[in-house]
Image 1: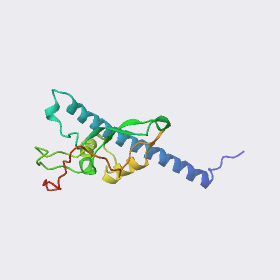
Image 2: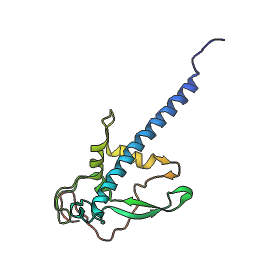
Image 3: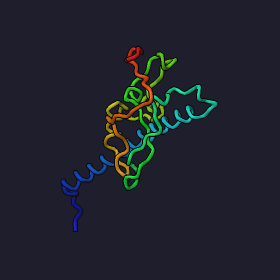
Image 4: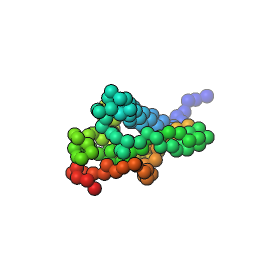
Amino acid sequence: YSLSPAPAIEMRDKIDDLRYERETVFYHMVLEALLRVIQEELKIRNQEETKFLARFSENVLRDDLIRPWGRNREKVLCYAMPTKVLLKKTLANYYVPEDRPSLYDLTKESLPDTIFEYSEEVLRDAMKNFKSPYGEVAAWDEKVPYDACECVNDDGTEE
């Protein structure tokens, strides 16, 4: 009996499995951090004594959306926000009295240092590719209605 190295196909499969596992853990960490930021912002907005500190109104951060993303496709509450609010800093304007960081910028502040850049592409990949035991956890390009529009251009002027 002799010890021989694993066949190349087996080694490739193990490397692929490890890459997939590490990618899943990384995406989970990013999405969990984003959820914590959203929940903290909603907590500030929903408490009477801190409501005046809220940076994200109901017109840019919804917490009442229902999607069939639960176990056995049961309907569950979800969050929704425009891509601009998620990814881009908002300059002070008619709706926002002072500059507001993006939700992802706030998220990146809470993430550990890593050799990978926390880019917009990383967040998109995490939202599109991460699967929970029940299936998808996010939709990127879905259109969601808002009661009122707080739409502004990148320079802070109304659209």
